[in-house]
Image 1 (cartoon, helix red, strand yellow):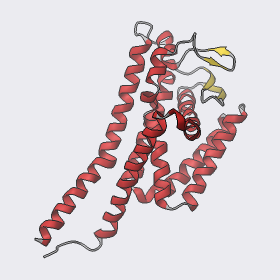
Image 2: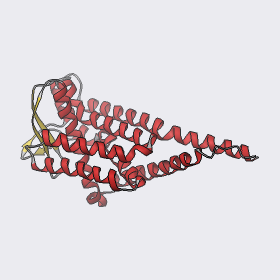
Image 3: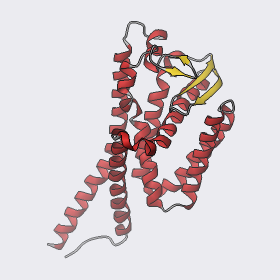
Image 4: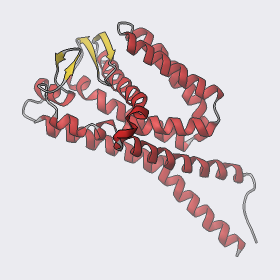
Length: 261
């Protein structure tokens, strides 16, 4: 005899759809980041990731009592902030680890609570637009990107099908969460002699952190540490946001089959 709560059926159906969309999003991100021929499709995603990265530096600056005097995102996908004050030991890793935290929390929320995906897209969109107006006013591209992405997320949350929103939010979450891992080769092997931003040679985040905070630790070790921390954060989000629901689905299916026996 089948013993199943009818009220649970819509919830289970929604959960299964969310799991399928999550898997599709992860496959799409992997393909985009690993096939050079698809760079044109990756470009907007890379700009969004750069924006979140620089926002991490800016927020850490403000939290530690500093002042953000410049916020830039460039057409080549690079970015930087100019600041006065703040604590180097927190601001340095806040780009990669801030992006990892943002992406991991976003991944957990949209997969653990898929019904909140559209309202969450609207909330993040409003936050991005407001943050941009106050921080990125000095750089036209950063201003356009921040407000544009913010308005796009608001429109997505208000008008798009929840499954479409879930797919888009998962793609953004995975890309930002694993930025430190995707950029590991750049962090380890691209030095201040190789990187140019606005015609000036600059050091990457790992090199700057090593020089300013931990001169006794090489930039490569710092880069590996950041990548490992990003993977740990995303792994936790993946476990609690996706894997546990999969386990629940397996258990529910098993209970259903037993009930029919």
